[in-house]
Image (tube, rainbow, N blue to C red; front, side):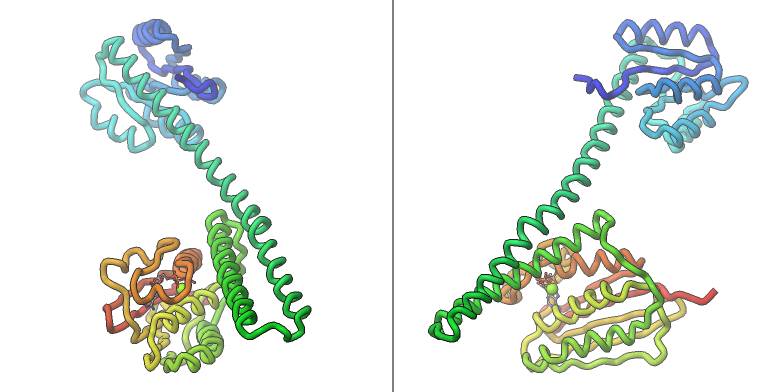
Length: 369
Ligand SMILES: Nc1ncnc2c1ncn2[C@@H]1O[C@H](COP(=O)(O)OP(=O)(O)OP(=O)(O)O)[C@@H](O)[C@H]1O
Ligand SMILES: [Mg+2]
């Protein structure tokens, strides 16, 4: 069934009156409203006014180039499905026209049935285009609603539960038995995990729909790395992991958003601490060449199996096995990759099971103009 919102109006632009009359008759018989034009410019004007579903354009007209008409209509009205009418000798031009935005071609001479078949395909293609656009808009709307839903319906109750637990601790004034206190601590930890997951999730949705605010300024990555190392040091000491750095002097600046890049570094170094057993080492290095600034984080941990490596930046992906004992949502790397993309920077992982993992980040250098 044809969607009432999709135009089935057909416009035919051809200098041969006999072709125009023949096509009009054949298509009107099948129920399509048809308008014709023997002049290129007048045809473009009709396309603008009528917004037809499909436009047929003859490539060879004496006073104007069909190729130009294709180019103008496909640029200005990309929803319209363009079909070129060509002589046998101009199949090469038909290919050229398709590169410029035409959807199909109809070689001359053609029968009414061939014309109707191409028209039907064109209208179906138009329907699919409209449907795809509708789904894109629906997806964007759902993503916007999703952010509102998650922040109101999930984040707010969690804060309330946290406050209840605080009140419970105050009311009991230390009278709770140790095992009851332990349960309360576990609740607090689980709530914290859930809050981290929600924040990650919201950040990713915000990046995807373009509402994640980033203020790019010139940044010295050495300072950022030092801050991340300071933040991570207590955790490494607790886990008996040696955290070392090999930073290049006078590292060139990059353009970036300080807070989001700090979170990327914390995610990557945080992963290294999570997936490296006590006694292991984490090394953070920085370097540069004429075009890029490099930051790498290597660990001597359990590594990532080769066949899992391609998926680690996918949302919710976690490697099953020993690593899974560590709590996590599988969103840290997804978030980090999206932030890096937004900086025109890359992040890649190399790993050997049982030996360790290296994440390498590559940022484009900025030069003073
Ligand atoms: N340095 C690493 N060594 C070994 N495995 C790693 C390392 N970094 C990441 N991984 C694997 O990649 C998976 C995805 O990492 P990611 O940071 O996205 O999620 P997570 O750490 O599980 O959870 P969170 O969202 O809390 O960060 C991890 O679950 C782990 O299996
Ligand atoms: Mg992580």
